[in-house]
Length: 216
Image (cartoon, rainbow, N blue to C red; front, side, top):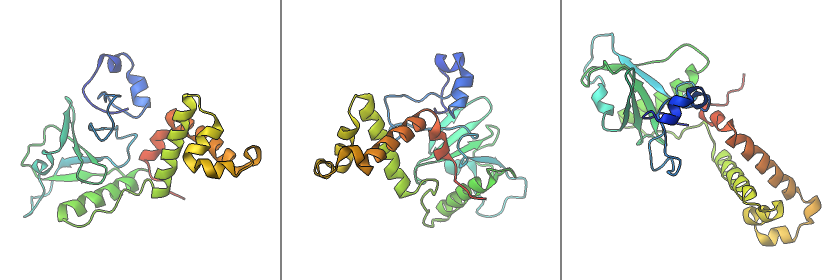
């Protein structure tokens, strides 16, 4: 669920939308995230950065709000949402509408459990502004992305009444499955796990993808 212009559906069930990780901005379900801006709530996405007016005297080279206004924008009575697509998969900024375009700005990070996640996002923003190489978002590894893709393919096929064996043939190849004794094949368990985890992901587990997995 995403943030955007309010819709009748959003006004009828705001609690449900917020629980799904979004605000009152609706995304078009027929379009992919690559075809439309996606704005999550700050509670769901711990990489969102909140811009604030710079209380200290402006220094030479200070960044102003204008530096970000060329990106995707959404405006509410209380907030200005900006999406910088040129930074990785996109970096979401939130600002007070009272901040003027040429006002120098800073980033406010609360001292809470999400602080380290937002510091990582701030590091990527600062590297972008300085012209340095921006490291990829570390919330998902390449291996996790591959498994997520397999999970969603497995669930989609299952919803279209494909058997687990048929799903395995698509994911792992017909020849490989033909060599296996299916009833005792470990690939059967793999497909079952992909369907189970993919179903849980669709049911709300996708929100975990917006947070870093940190070990204590």
